[in-house]
Amino acid sequence: MGRAYQNRKESMAKTSDMKAKVYSRYSREIYMCAKSGGSEPTGNLALASLLERAKKDQVPAHVIDKAITKAAGGGGEDFAVARYEGFGPGNTMIIVDCLTDNPNRTYGDVRTCFNKVKAKLGASGAVSHLFDHDAIFSFSGLDEEAVFEALADADVDVSDIEAENDVVTVFAPHTEYAKTRDALKSAFDGIEFEVDEVQFVPQMTTAIEGADVEQFEKMLDLLNFLDDVQHVYHNAAY
Image (cartoon, rainbow, N blue to C red):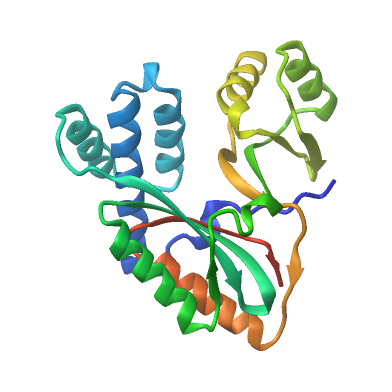
């Protein structure tokens, strides 16, 4: 099917300042995950997965430990999920996921990023209906047919399985995340995920070029610099 999806690493650190932003985002996400689901990874699958990703992205141990300790102690900040949707340069579609303790501030900051490149924020649902909300697992060294059989045996509702250059990628509804991950871990001892997360995957991409590319990249940089922004999803192809 050739689904287009982007790994979070595409927006990872280019400078030490951006690394600090990345660490801050992981810290906030780990804190919220541990606070809502428990601070022990053995009993909180979402936290266990998040910690694995953080370690792969070289988030320092003290950042991880501080976030978990803070969550275990109770109290602290009260972050809420905020999602913004809109249209970027070249009529691209963009979804911005945030964790915020001040929705009014976050909305204003995100809107400013859109305005600076003459893009437009839309209402809730303006573009998300043109994305699939998928759990995505990518790994190497396994046969596509064996993966399909293992997931079928576990009664996992798989949307798609792709194999390219010895890398198998499994797409499943986001509601099947835990079930899919457990099935893969159980069936294939020692499996290591290159991608293990939930993303918004565009149903179709929009090709952009020239000035639109420059403005689009400027917009991504502006959004990625905001403390409250956790993830940016889009359908741009360039």
